[in-house]
Length: 315
Image (cartoon, rainbow, N blue to C red; front, side):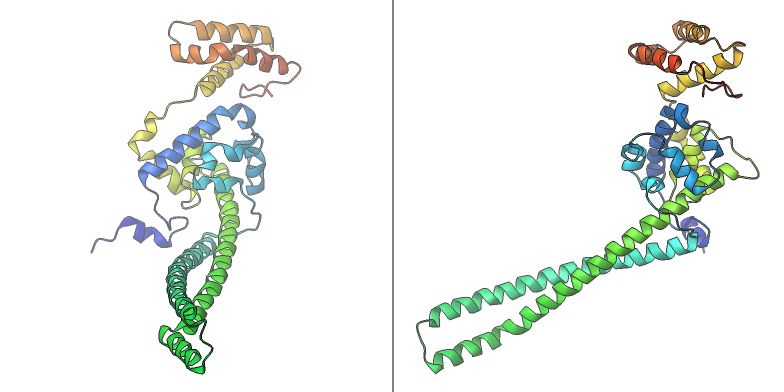
């Protein structure tokens, strides 16, 4: 008997929910863009973030990071949410299952409550019409007739049923919201702990590049970092996701800094300009950077008096 891989892996750490290759690729592309565009901000700190709380601090070095598409549009937004209590994959899985059951229960109660409300409203409208018909008759016979109509229409029973279901729906909604917040908090800590685990990987299987960070993070909070990274590597489209222009300039500048013996920023700026003007340099890169050159010079000027890190970055 052939068992689908996602079912066979359901009891393994971080593999309790399948993410489609298409969705995983979108997450990877968004994360890669965010990381590459901001690598100059945290390219030194992120590969050294060995604890979950440090991962959050580093990502928040980017102003309004939570509004970046990588976090705003995908479940990986959990990386920036509040959540500081240590949890395991098992407890997160259990909370997620409880949340899904609560969401399903709320949905069923919502439909039942809506149906009961419509039924109660329908019989109430019919009874009100009868009351209007007999309102000028004060006889006991008219009162008895209205009581019979009310009983035949089940006005009281349907009204009570609608009220009961409405009350149960409010309780179910509160329970679903409570579990939702609890799940978000647990997923937040667990996701950041996986990023930290990638950084601490004792086997040092993968270099700490923006692309590898993006692969390790793309499957969060449903996959552990290693499974996420390996799944991403198997997606053909991953290799086609281009480096951002800012990261290309960052790498270019990094190589120039490595090859420049002195820390003369004027020389570095001149070498960068010459590199960009070379015929073999991507013309689209030049077109993108050209209107930004003024800000590039300001950034270089801001580095005056700061030391150079060994791996070639200005800090």
